[in-house]
Length: 554
Image (cartoon, rainbow, N blue to C red; front, side):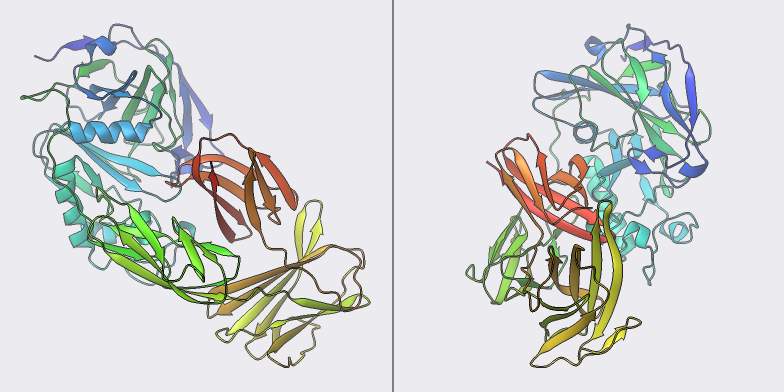
């Protein structure tokens, strides 16, 4: 018999106007500009319901946390409680997924949204839940951010593709979710490069509880650090919320972002019951095997000494073992570690990603070229930039930046066709290159100015190579400038960032969890860090350009 304990709250709701974006589980909600954000609710819990009243525990370890789920669907019990144990570090997402896998009555609908992590937008409870997805209605949903048909024109979400068989993908996700306790939305960022944000058309015809939605309802996230502390609204996503020993995390359904509906924990907590036949141990569930693997690029071009990152995608997205091994057909030409390809010497090499489960492979052909050092011949305030032609190139783009205290200011852009003719730049005079070289006149450079010159080599819309040089001193005739390649070096607790000023950086784990954010202010930035040993990613963004570096702490 379930033990029901009353829990009384005194609420003082502070409502603050949100002028920028409102966050739901760390994600910007589409209605955010017109929303009043409940930044903090002064909810104080009665101490009558404690860890001792929790019946259903999952996990092992010395640390404890409580998970409360409130459906606000008019069905009682409205708020149910589970317990979670762990050692080391765990997140709210770790907790709710572990509990959903262990409790056969609890079903979770979630989605990977890229570097922002996972959203949780559907939770059900009951026996043999009949969960469905109305694909036809979703396709015609005006508020749905996902587009089911080409052309893919949603750069805000970084759309890169569309599902070939969405009905089959959804059906498979539901089948696997019923078995594992977690439905991973198949139309998501991990598979297609962007999230669908479509949970409004998922439904359940049976069971005790079911709530799902994004535009027309969502799951709020409330937390408190201890049994007796106040609950407060968390703007962090499930991936970012790090659990603390003794914390209480409440997932609460909110049907309308403009009202107070569902924005506070309910007044009755009920201990989730232990299923017949055992305690909270995880049930025997089928293994979800890998069926295919793909890479984000089928070909790649790099200079010797440079590096680039290849990303492998595993299908299905909820496969149990997503481990991938990497290999190079010739390590003398290029090496690869955890998807980071480094050029060694000119040549062509095949980089292979292979799934540990099933042995499926995907291959990228990598061409390593000689290091290119452009030449600049100065004549007073003018100069001529010279660099070699690339056989595969259809055009070139040269960007000239003046280095200022506030950052880089672009002062000129030159677009050159494959033959070396300048096709975009007023006042410029075409110079025909010879002996396989491109010549570009640069006008009105200050003698004492400091400039960064970036050369992009394009094949259609794809950037196949990039050269960067800097004029850092008073030029002399026929001066040869050394390539100022961007790089990141870790040594003795400090990151050294070279030629990356102005970039906004995200320091992440290899799994994509964001640890720090910062901006490099100078060409030679030193950034102290203290992190455990292991591999890390550093992603930098500036003016639409994105660079990814990998480094290791021993």
